[in-house]
Image (cartoon, rainbow, N blue to C red):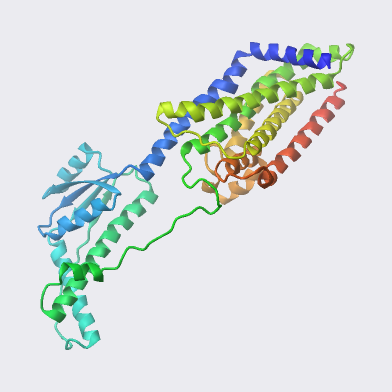
Length: 424
């Protein structure tokens, strides 16, 4: 036991002198967590809170345009500025000056033309009900369309949402105009306001809930980024631990241990214990920053799960998997350049496949299947189940089981490699 603690002390001294490794394991992931959360939080706020700037170029003199523009404002999706009787060049200049992402042009006579279309449909409906004789006269009207111009930065999903919102408002207006026209045709007078309100269909009531009972209804960007970059920090210990292993092999430390009253297994175990403690410290540090420092930076605070035991187990198994991978790279590599180069590149590739940079649901189908080979995938799913779904330890077993299997495989590779090189 004394030799074991001395080995841990020796590893701690070596680690404390590795400033580059410490920067990569602590400073870099913290900066990544802050920067990526801030960037993604701005996207979350744009989707959920901010309104899209829209410039309405109104060339129609009908009073219906005010109703239409008012309905667009009340939809809560747009921040609207109205420009009247402007040319296309003038409209584009105004839009650029006001950072408008969408230009909606209402052509002259649009609502008068729309009223004639509604009148024709009303006459057809009256004839179908038998309340009006067949009229051979055909009402003609010009074909007019609303014109939407989008800023190229708007993604296609936003464009669909904007078109659906404008179309929805226009459908409501057409329904109201149809009810007014039918009432006027039957009763010969304008429809009372209270009657019109009763005849208009109510908005569909939707009861929202989460798929899994007890899960967080509105997860924020912090809930996604803090676990992701904590995992990235854990696995980036390959730079420090892998280099450490190669340096000791090249310097002959492993051979000298064979003639000393100690064993290489004690050294390997001490390395794992120390770096496992480092990964847990990384977890506590980054989670603490998300919990208490992020609100000071005007970022959402990290909501800790109800099961601390499940959180500890996922963190422990993920950290052990990261340390096993780092040891495996360090023992197989022949030079520090190989350990650093392959270790850093492989971690970035595995992180990308595991959903650290791009969420798994947004990946192509092929990459979704390939992602299952990445330990980041299983570890990240474990963290998400704990943080977002509030799962207990018994429910995350399927997430940690592949990590445990990978740890066993890596430990066997470490043992066989040391055995083949006559180091143990």
